[in-house]
Length: 460
Length: 66
Image 1: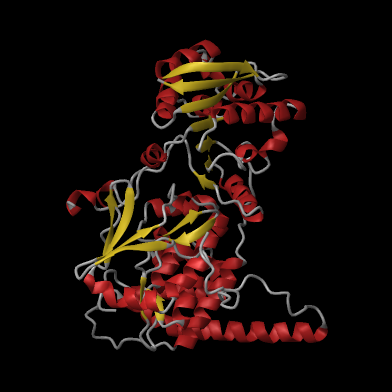
Image 2: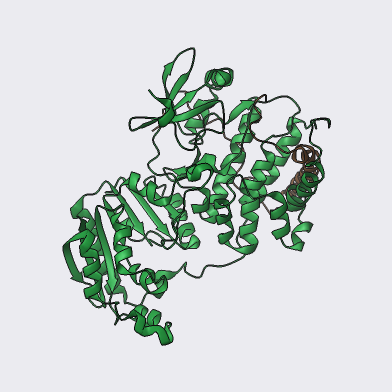
């Protein structure tokens, strides 16, 4: 094995071990420096309980030698990042982290880091994916990952509460957490009167500011009893579990304001379901999938389903359904098709671009319903570019094209005012011409009672 | 904790003592209010939201992961 080129691109910050690709399988190497912790975590049954409670990704031990222990974690089909989570998803990830730290403390361990990037969504729930995040608890020491928890979880969540879910995307720029002084400065003055926000954010910002210059390890290390630490965790947990957004959704009830009647809508649902079923796909992605209405029609028949939408509130609604129905094969996440998540972190590779992840996920079917008119008319993206985008990761593409006569298209065109002539190209013929470059047309039908066409394309 | 591969922040380590005092006061008042509400009959004892504690009791020793 040549470790050099096989080590996972995001796995280098912690010397305790690293992830590497062994063919198609992702494995984790544990270095001797971490053997004592690993053995204790394993032998005490700590890992087992976390696995049974679906809090930590399960793994099997693949090999044990003096130089390294290799474990193989359960495969996660698609990893979403914190800046792709809805508010409720983000909350659940934060609560998971607190729950694990609280449990770890009671068993003589700690979470040595509390990065939001150590959590992802798997089988409908948030789960810790960094098995080596634990260390021994040393009596009366404060939680060393406390600040990280504030800058990765509490901060983004309260910023979203006051300023909207766009704030969660700040994690794309701040891979190491939003600086605490920045969080403090962005919060409204009234947040100073919340004991939780004052102590955990504003006071923390002041203390960090005071102590950031003369850091030579001279200052006496602060002490904190286990009981006191548990109180911090409990109040944070209670505060976060009650957090709600101050801003309401503009898109949340999209389907109640569609421009066609219920008959046409149920026809569309039936048609899409039938087309998907004929392809018997194992995996599917629904772009602009809102609350997952279309994806859910095939939820019992498709093993892995991704639903993505620009609207964080729709994703929240979708996630709520996942939780209510205990769905394990549908993963909702936020993304903007006009600006998909870039590669971030060191060397631009610590977190992969959305497109790279989609290529690896390699969906059997891509759904793009009621989307292309927004891409073309709101985003000014030419058909050729949209076609090449979908072709980069799709095998079969089911795409809806609303004609010029459609009322949504009409309204989008009207908004162009004096530039309306710049969009004369928006018609069926040009759409087909562009998509025919990358795809072969398999089926085409006009949705009854609407001005919309559905295409089934196969990638060339 | 020999392997400090990120800086926990000195201020953050010190501030936790103060944060814990605030947390202690909050929990004390919360529990007090909770008890008063039960005595006055506003709340039943099961009326609890999602808890931070992992319930150890319903873990079967041989409960395999699905």
